[in-house]
Length: 278
Image (cartoon, rainbow, N blue to C red; front, top):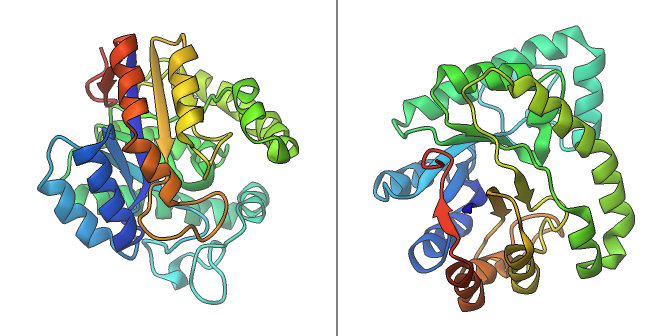
């Protein structure tokens, strides 16, 4: 069994960059997803260049972040401050209803791929901030560009709802909503991947426990997983958590946990990246 362990939001801040590097050097982290327009993206690229055994991919940001293009080039995607719209639901509605928004969206996605290519880093994988890469108006652009820029894989977050429910019962209604909305998008995305050389793993853990990837949960998932390929994605940060679903020190502690390393060893799991998958 091969397991990819990824940190999202690489480049968003210096504290996240520090957490990513620590989790890779001292823990079990194998890859990171880069926000090319993040506040600390330049630092993240420099760190990645100096750490070639850390697989790096593109974290496409289409909401709640800074765009690659000038705001005046994409007026239907940004707010009054020139930032990508903060609410992913309303952003998705805009993509669905507005042809102009979809045209601007295609250019913004390509600009982020081009900015990643300019770093000179190999492109291990592609995924999306808030999973907007799965939106029907976005996915085809992402898949085409992922192939053009020689990515090895794309994240399709098929998580395990039933495993996660006992670990966080207060968020059970939200998890059911995620399962009902993102589940069908994942099945559709797998169909769009047919005939392409891009890889998707069999199981992805991280959606249902976003912001709360505790040691106990990750150990349980590693102990019970039956998929031959899986990805765990976390949001490590050295700074205090700013909101419940995002970067946090708990996820960093999990990546550094001896118990997590021990279950990987006991089960004979092989740490991997999308590029190194058999």
